[in-house]
Length: 312
Image 1 (cartoon, rainbow, N blue to C red):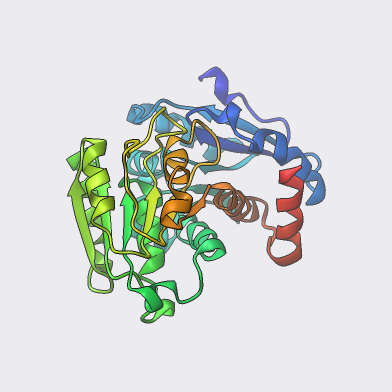
Image 2 (image 1 turned 90 degrees about the vertical axis):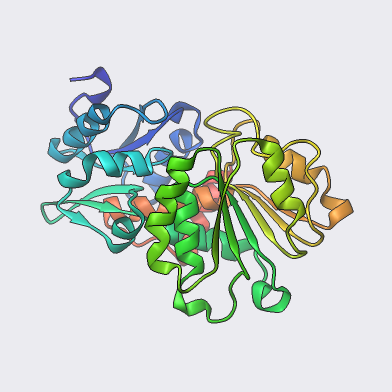
């Protein structure tokens, strides 16, 4: 067995990513565990390269499933690839994971090894924290999602929920550098295509993303869901990108060079932009998974307390 998968000797939550050691969660989780009454619980990172071999994903999942004190994991970056490689290994797959073909939370419940896609919930909560009420109904803006990975699919599912009524973007465009991931996204989102206007663009060059942004109407939302700026350096846009007036730019990362965010900040005043980082997404993403893994509801005052603890 790989050395990173040593048998747990105390209740353990894992973080499956690319550069997990650099994440704030490694310092934050022990404080959260204390606040949640989980003082004997620990967190460990499992780093895998982007688009790792299928056997690596299966080795990790097999270990988590069968090691008694390995209680679960949060999955980032590898959400789609891990689910595709290990779908047959789960005893329970929640409807979001089934629809999106991705997994962000691995947990155990009454003897079942469970796969959940929490991003439609956590991304929705993060969006609601900075997108003004009735923003889409009042302004008829559009959404441009840069990247066709798990976070993008989750956001589309969030926007397509019936609860929004007519407060939805006029159109959602998904841009991606490679066609296979773009085609996969279109297949996964076919079930909601009747509820929201979706468009797909193959954009291997950042200049092409600049062109998509320039063509957006005012009061639109642009999201960097590519991983560039965190898992790899750079940005899906260039320094000459030009945003539409009164729009929103969301960098869903909170660490890394965050070049996309800086490019948007450079024209914040000129274009009256709202520029948001990924901190609240980070908080909701982790608390949703911790709640599932340790079977503790985290909301309201407790959620606010954990956010405060994490910022210190």
